[in-house]
Every structure is written in C-alpha cells, then in structure tokens.
Length: 175
Image (cartoon, rainbow, N blue to C red; front, side, top):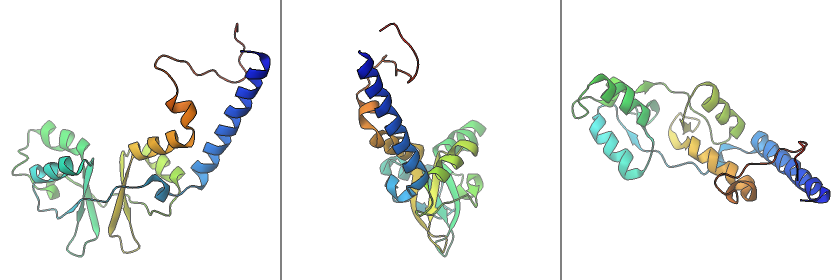
C-alpha cells in the first residue's frame, strides 16, 4: 500500500467513524426494526412460553396485565438461571414466579445510544418497547444493534476475511 492509499484509508475510516457516531447519537430505536412482541399473561407456564419463544424465534416474551400493559419480561437467560439452574419444572412453574417484574422499557422514539447504554451498563440483551400507555409494541435485542452497526459501514464489516486484522489509522507498519 502506498502512502496515498494509507491517507485515503485513514480519511475513509474517519468519515465512517463520524457517520457511526452521528447515527448512534441521532438515530432512534425505530431504525433498528424491532421485533413484534410475544405477549403473555403471567399465568402461562414457562414451558408454554419457551415453546412460543422458539416458534417465534424470539429471545423473550413480555408479560402483560389484564389491561395489556407491560408487567414483566421473561428471557432465554431466565430459562437458564431461574428455572433450569434452580431445578424447577418448566411445565408447572408460571411466568409470574420467575419473570422480571416492571422491567425497564424504552420508546421507539428513544435514541439508539440510550438502548446501547442500557445494554452495556445494565447488562440487558433484550429491551421491551412500549407506547404511552405502557402497552408493548416491540422488542429490541443486541442482535438488532449489531445488524444496524454492520449496515452503517458494510464494507469494513462484511468484507473482512476471517483472521484479517483491521489496520489502526496513524500506526506505522513495515508496508
């Protein structure tokens, strides 16, 4: 690679970083194309919820009260830690016994950077989306964020072969 190629690469890399930063701070969660939620009452068994999660290819179900408002969430991590890990019978345990009550939820108008913050700081992998009445309208996962990031700079992400290293701008190499 010549010096001119290095400079063009660095310029392109910085432009991509600015685009990602701008999108991260400006894009709303709607840009992530959230999944439609699977909503169930807390009386449903864990087994039935897992069957619904598998058939819908979703990482979680949202638990709603009699008014249809979000009252809890049950995730694939909960299956492992709160049911199987504790030796409970998924066919007899209800969601109400093992769900996370009153989970943090976001609006589709919230910025992606806040969703990333919640996933990073709070350790969430799945975040419910609700309307003004606290009724579930979607679900966002870490996978949505990763796909969105890959779509922002597809050439840098999708054309990288396994084992390729990403050159760091400003570092000298022997080439």
